[in-house]
Length: 332
Ligand SMILES: Nc1ncnc2c1ncn2[C@@H]1O[C@H](COP(=O)(O)OP(=O)(O)OP(=O)(O)O)[C@@H](O)[C@H]1O
Ligand SMILES: [Mg+2]
Image (cartoon, rainbow, N blue to C red; front, side):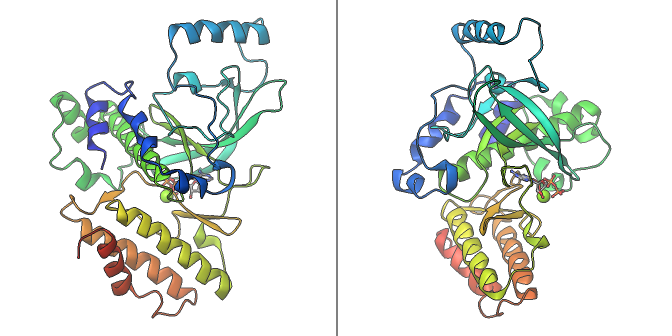
């Protein structure tokens, strides 16, 4: 999905976020109103992800008023909000700190992964009662590991600049960095779209290069929500989580999507609420020739886990679930 965005990225046109800003219009007010927690639907400040000259000049003045030297008064770096190549769907939820005088502080590692590392970042306005926690997911470009999802992904794609295509195929440092950026672009686009249709995913705050800043799923002290695989839910909770997963999969299927790498590792549970994460490879089940296969694999993975934890096999029946999703996608 979102090939258009990736192609734009490859043609060096990533800074133009105009067409992405169209997405929020697709959101029904009732869908938004039904959204959970702090994403209640109230519009946040109408700050764009990119700065006009005027805004930049204002920012300089604001920052000068906070500190006389060059660095932020505390923390690691000035908020990178104004430099974002892409920002999340609007209206931004009110918890998103958009003040340009805010400071980003890295608080630690949430998890290092095979393809990306995830860090906890606080964005706060010095001297004001205004802060939010975010998960910074940074795709790795420079190491020697291959992306396990690359194989089918690069295949058959037309990339305008063949030098870039060759670099990616050779996996040179430059090529690896391009691949990492493609994954970041793809995941951000997927999260934007899914969040906008009310799917349970973290709100995507911004993307710069290979780094995504996402809504932090966890408590106010910075403890991340457990992955589903870490839980030992009782039968009632298990049935409830299953119900939430089916609803999430139906929401995706209605838009013609399946997660593409669904497992109990890519689901977080926060206060009893299930969220889908790790979405760069979201599959378009209609246009992808292997779409049905990916959907069936996701369904099997989900059913296997839930049945292994005690959900009745006739509730989590892969055939019935796949049939339901294909019907919702208009494919049967
Ligand atoms: N928004 C978030 N809020 C809290 N924790 C998160 C968030 N996003 C990711 N994490 C944590 O970071 C881990 C890795 O994230 P993710 O699955 O997106 O990346 P990955 O590169 O696929 O990692 P892995 O190889 O471990 O699956 C997750 O399992 C989860 O524990
Ligand atoms: Mg993962």
